[in-house]
Image 1: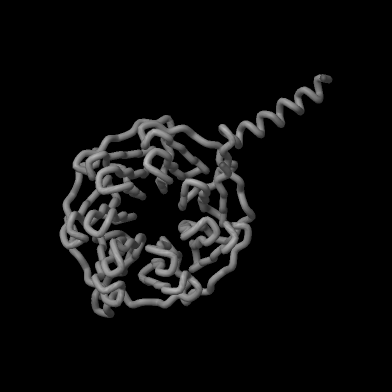
Image 2: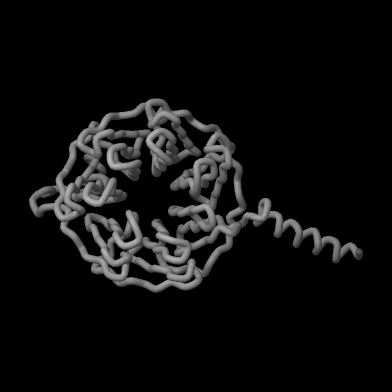
Amino acid sequence: MPAKNYRLFALLSFIVLSVSVHGQAWRAHSPAAKGDLVAIHFTSASRGFIAGDGGYLASTADGGRTWRQHPLSTTEDINEIYFRNDENGYLVAGRKLFITSDGGNSWLETNIFRALDFRNSTPILLSIRFADRRRGLAVGSVLNAKGNVIDSLVMRTVDGGVTWQRVIVPSKAELFHLDFDGSSHGWIVGDKGLIIATTDGGDTWNVQRSGTTNALYNVDFRDEDEGYAVGEQGTILRTENGGRSWEQVRSAFPGTFMRVDFADDKNGMIVGHRGVILRSSDKGRTWVKMESGTTRNLYGLHIEKKYGFAVGAGGLLVEYLR
């Protein structure tokens, strides 16, 4: 083989290897929005939603090949979208909550705060989950006039989202994300390594020892015992006893991690800044880096056994190819 052709062959081989590990790779789709995409949720292999800056919301009915935008009555950034089943979904944008009962075809804005609840401050909602049909939580922070966090925020409903009451928790730190297992056990992660947990559906909360002061941006529990949390400066935490003790997992990747999601009991992924994607196949004990094909920040992740997507800065959408 001539030297020029050999160099070309070697280059092409390197490119293929750099985006494929054991037949697994990520493929970037055309930007779906002008602003950042921060949230993604699929209810099936074909039906999914992406959301982000400026109230942008879009859905797919063909597994991500095409997307249809849904206009919402807000220009607030959408921080999270979540469905508890195929028909019933929720999204939070700034201080607003939107609910759908028809699979996302229409969205109704719901008042979660009373007019006099926050006279000289502003509530911001960052995450929402429902433990069952009636009981749900939305979390975030309270900001003063200068935009500084002055308190944590936990709102709770016991009637499916019709009415909400504030729950006082043992911290004033900003709360970034929550997860539930069943109707009783729940966890919230936040700034300065905060993890708080409930075993009574959200009535009371207790601080768990995380072993870190780094901000924790995401938490994912497989059951009431096995869970994971990720955050800044390469922080990866795992527990096998519901958070009574947390183990810090060392890795060679010091960046900021934004999302962790497990497709099954063994296989999980993490996404973060500068296009970082990590993969584990041993219940989160060790992590290896995958080639994402991008250096943009990744903010959202949804992984299942047979499909997966991540979203990020500049409307980026990448699909996991098995």
